[in-house]
Length: 91
Image (cartoon, rainbow, N blue to C red; front, side, top):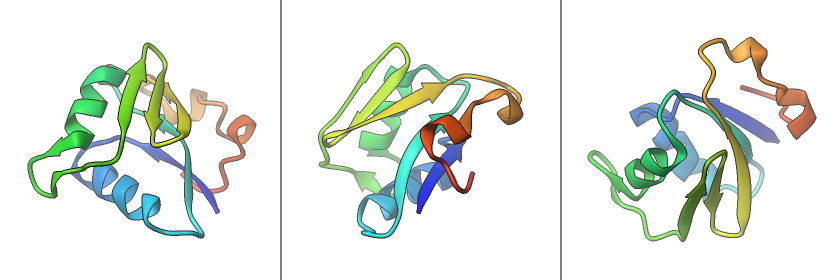
């Protein structure tokens, strides 16, 4: 199943980590008001889950998790995001 995460707060980050370790779930896109570089920092140094040693990087509109490149939007209304174009089944 391909999912989209709307918000990479503590719950969104926990979901990202869980999905990374699950063969049946793939994160396909992310939406959050913070810049992608900040999101990568928060994923790497989560105050609850601790350090995440998965390779992470960012560009202006993408987050790279391992070998996956995820589009990253910063929109206040999740309905404005073309989730289906990314193959997202569940947000």
